[in-house]
Length: 371
Ligand code: FNR
Image (cartoon, rainbow, N blue to C red; front, side, top):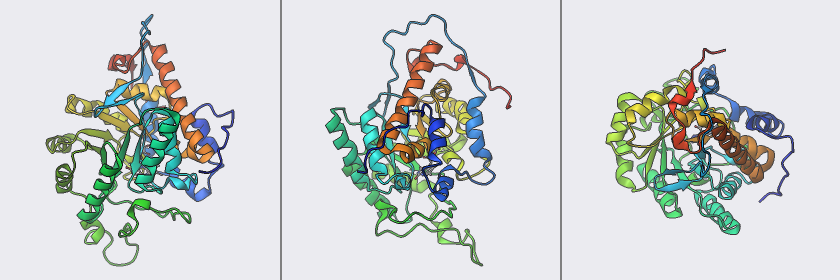
């Protein structure tokens, strides 16, 4: 592991980390992490959606025996916070996903490992386990995020590797079938899990077919792939994306175990609504059958409270993980999680909500008109 870096004392919020990270990263990497698709309307909405809600406190609430514990798929999470799957974390720090795994172990916070991790999925889990052992903490939750590859055999191999390593759930991301990127990975950073497999295909910029009629469109994931995955593994399957309306009914009937309502941090289809905007409707439609998690724009304890009060069971943190890695590696990520957990407990206490189950829709007022 790289030498540890001290945390600058003036970093008190995730916004502070974001501002500082800009000075720790090459311009191209910074742009790659921060950017959204198109005109970035969805990216902006992910933040303004939170800003439009206000909180209504309960007076003189009994805060004894409070906690922030949530159970998901039979696992205990100390707080409703997970580290989102983010590709190629060695862009931000030489230890990459190993640093994230150690912070996850230190703070007992679940992590979701991307198919496109820059350290192998086995080495990431080994790092998390050995850190937990050294620290005497229990194993923190670890889920594997699957990007379906064109070949079934490759998907089966990835799923079996995740099972054998000890991951406890598969997150199937369904919203990035076709994605454009002009970002060139820095030297030495690669998709460690996919060594020997076909490189990702890109939208053609040459004459002739652009997308339709090319192998890229032909290989885009379909419903029968979800059906196949359900048969292929006994691990819980969590869909990640904007799964709405009848699609949601269909996914439930195929036996999914959870949903991460997400627009991929506004990086894929500009014009999607924020997950927070769609959350109440999705939670009503699901009617308690599976847990609904959310990501996109979560930056403070108040944001977490807002999402939970609107029916999310937990949230995932995306870009701030990159910011913290860039500023101070493993210690930065641990500190970032600690900041969020502190803000969460402070907000709950000030609201008079000693447990996540005390956070109700009636404790919010809004949405206020956009500023
Ligand atoms: C992502 N995201 C993502 N999602 C996924 O399922 N697999 C992946 O490999 C990646 N990679 C990735 C890289 C980068 C640079 C970013 C910013 C995002 C999406 C991620 O999991 C999450 O949905 C969003 O980042 C959440 O929004 P915030 O917290 O970044 O606003």
